[in-house]
Length: 195
Image 1 (tube, rainbow, N blue to C red):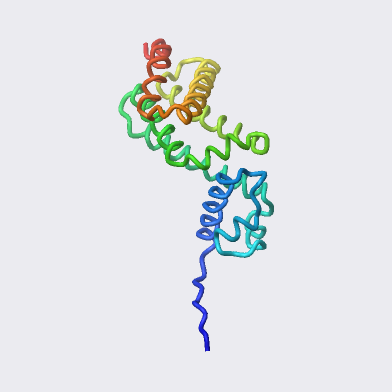
Image 2 (image 1 turned 135 degrees about the vertical axis):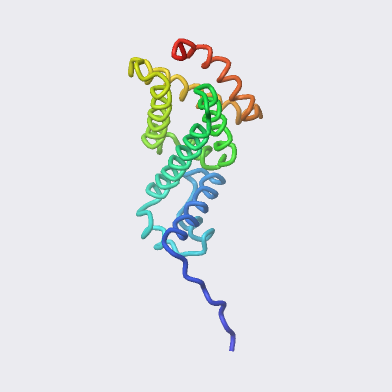
């Protein structure tokens, strides 16, 4: 009599992490449009109905991948900035953490940017999250500054970081180099905030 290997039950949070990891890999390899739920299920070793139970649809799965990346990005950038002792170091550490995170999670970000037609709103939510975070950092250093000006500067920084990240992917520029390029431009411009 042949014995089957016993399957270990996995908790919901662990299963969702496995599914998200598999989805990022499949979406990254095939693109969102060409990926199937069958491929994701096979990669995880579950049935397709399990995916639908957890995420509802392929679009729901993509949005969950993006939501996880968004939460992780805020965590790494805020942790890096919190470890700084000066405003300049806050911006430098936060920016370096942004670039390092994108590099370490390249498949997720490739999917996000390549599928912006599908995930445009989710991408905009990440921009807004990071803009609010940076405006808050700037505001903590300059509590009397005009909030609109702080938000404007934060939008400039987020936009510059996004464009640098896309450029880095094509050119091989390191996280450290990209951070220095941003600091060269932005920190000089923020000199008025420091005074």
